[in-house]
Length: 248
Image 1 (spheres, rainbow, N blue to C red):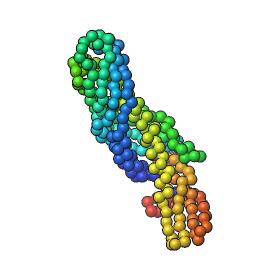
Image 2 (image 1 turned 120 degrees about the vertical axis):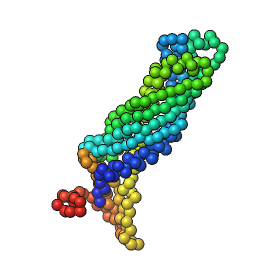
Image 3 (image 1 turned 90 degrees about the horizontal axis):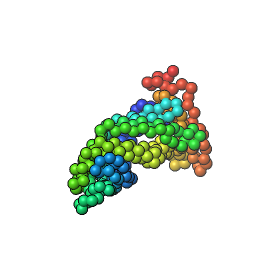
Image 4 (image 1 turned 30 degrees about the horizontal axis):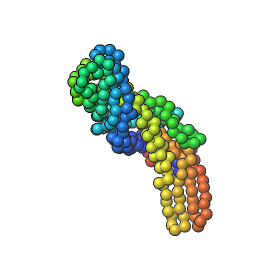
């Protein structure tokens, strides 16, 4: 048996990925980091911590295959973030009130492309490249008088946070999405099992993955168990593939 993922199959995989992404990113946290402000009365270090995703709307996802890579592109979506901020400034430290509070951010217009390469000998997945760009990033700070001062630097802070979120997105793709995607594709054949009676059973396991510009083929290893004896065969593609129900 050879399982083929054509456009419809890749579209279904994209819908499934959106569900996974909605759950995973909704539970994701971002590492704390500091941003250096070089000019003005607020010059110093702005520290952001406890950065969490408060709301996430997954983007549209599309998979396409080529002879060398599986591509995942995204468009749209929205993320709302919240974090705690604290400003360490030599000048502002002369004042007695605290310089800390909460920052709220909204990211929209994600465009990304991830290229996944599959090792034909081991069926291992690896990220070849990941690019992510958010076209709309807005922030709002609250908590003290320093928040009003920091609003003068919204553009600088927005760009710094935007880069951090883009880096975190590609890190999440590599560390979380890639293992999940590999598991879904490579383990899918294990769900195919047919019983022909009490003593005959046919099951499948993945042998290799072949990609083209139009589809992905999962080549199976067939396992027949009959009367306690195991017979293994390897699936091969026919010389011609039926098209729209007609043999050529």
